[in-house]
Amino acid sequence: MKRVISLLLAVLVACTFAVSSFAAEEPGNFIKSPEVEYEGNVVSAWFTPGEAIEILFTPFMNRDILSKDARVKIEKAYCSILEIPRIDKLVGGFDGIFNGNTANLAVSTLFDLSWKMGELTRDATIVLGGIDLSHFVCLLHYGAEGWEIVNDITIIGRNIQFTIGNLSPFAVVVDTTGTSDEPSSPATGDLITAISVCGAIALGCGAVYFISKSRKKAEEI
Image 1 (cartoon, helix red, strand yellow):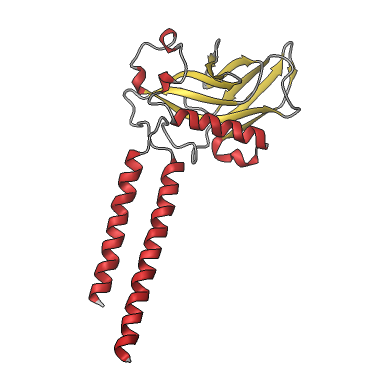
Image 2 (cartoon, helix red, strand yellow):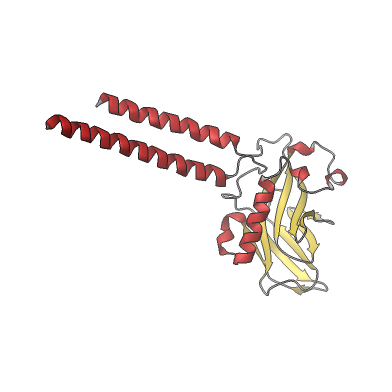
């Protein structure tokens, strides 16, 4: 019995180290995982010269409520961020808006914007709130040609105002220099790894238990 317990503990310890090592190797360009981060909301939106419209804000963690096409698009946007070594490789133009070390750039918020009535037919002015702007660098928009920097951003207190002609995923880019938050591994990969390891632990424990029971029966016979 002591051997069985020792073996179980060995499997558990080995799998624990495996989880840590897999998570550490996971690439990350996010301040916090978009799988668990809910930040931001639409304060107001309108067509010029003042026609109010309803714009829907959907964080990445709630992408299941989006239409199939919108969900596929935001997941592609998410993957495109994971596949690059640094945020400044995602889109050009940071030299004109940021004078610091671009290696310290990261995404703090990933979300989708959509018009309740369908596709935009003309430019709309949108004001977003509920987003930490203390280290704000720029707002990115995932359009038909991929990521692009949204121009003519206006910061009004704690809100961001901008004008856009089409809606899809957006990402807030911040400078992590001098902050306690560092770009971290997204939860998606870590969660998959954790589930896999838990499965391995369960299988290992089951196998050990089965072997021990078989031996006990054999001894009784």
